[in-house]
Amino acid sequence: TAGVFTRTLRLEGSAFNGHEPDEIRTNFDYTGRSLDSWAGRATWNPTTSWSFSGSFAYLKSPEALRPGQSVHRVTASALYARSLSSGGSFSAAAVYGSNRRAGEHESEPSGLVEGNVDSGRHSVFGRVELVRKEGADLAVSPALAAERFNVGEATLGYAYAFGNWIPIRASIGVRATVNTVPAALEATYGSRNPVGAAVFLRLAPSHGSGSAQHRMMDMKMTDTKEQTLIERASPGTVP
Image (tube, rainbow, N blue to C red):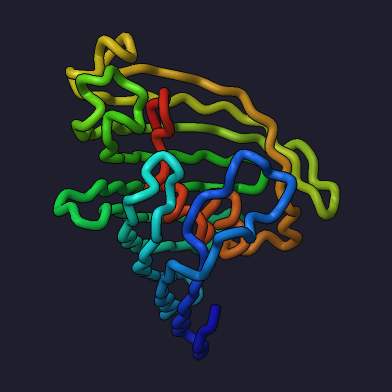
């Protein structure tokens, strides 16, 4: 990886091996591997509250189940964070990602919008997400494996911070999600709007003074989110 940095602009380029690892996770997969994939990324931070980024990547044969298919990947994001007069913070993100297999014209786009209001002890967060996936990735019947479907979700949650032991901040929370699937998948999932709920315990780095920019990490607004988004809806699940 190499890059050029200024006060507000960052340009990066990387060469890497794009193939997924084998099932043995305790070693490094050097044999037969090379730097056969590449990516470029630009990030612009015009103010302390805003950050914009975009990237393009070519991944040579990333999936073991599809060894002859390479992927072109595009991502874009806009992140915003600010401190509130009450001493809390507000942060939001809009993220887009798209995969297109080499030789195909149709892509698999995805997008999400999310936000988080954090008063220190209390935080409320929400997310709306839409992903287009091939039936084979959703583990549906073989007759639908080659078709592409739009699946989505809307999530709302609340978390309460009950401990702040430097360098750890502990919170307990609850979240509820409503999913949407097309009519063709209703029989697979039992409903066009599967619902779910979860209670969770979160351990995160303590923020000290708690600036809005640092609190963006609570929402997982990192560079990896763009890649995670377009790989959602793993086999047998709704995103």
